[in-house]
Length: 138
Image 1 (cartoon, one colour):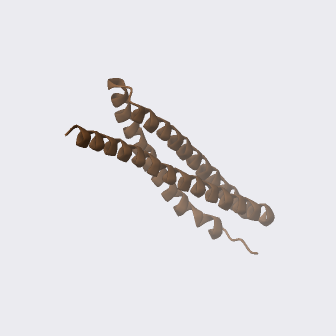
Image 2 (cartoon, rainbow, N blue to C red):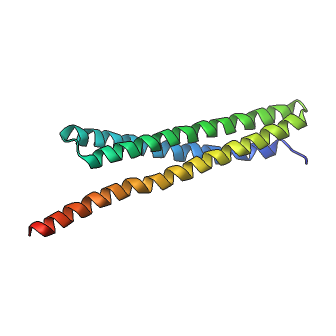
Image 3 (cartoon, rainbow, N blue to C red):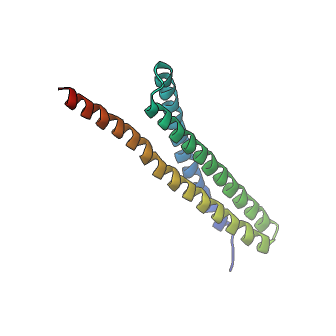
């Protein structure tokens, strides 16, 4: 297998887009945490606690996604450096490692997306219980 300098460079745009997506998700979750914090201060409802637990898991996963993405980027840079100094064998290994780190980052992102559906389910359950209670009282 021949690895050229352009091969690791191909991952740079993908990694940049991943960081942008992870950052956007993190900022969205930060805003949601602030809103839930004010809701929590008003009353300690079990639904708010469930949301807080869900958000803690999601934020932790996004942090690990970002860490794996950073490791992937560093692997790409190290691979390119090895290619520049004519060290092909280590460059191939670092490039493979970089790809594995990116795949790990994507799997964590998938996990976080699946958990985000749980957050919506909590809201929907809360609304259905409120609607059912209203129907019973009528």
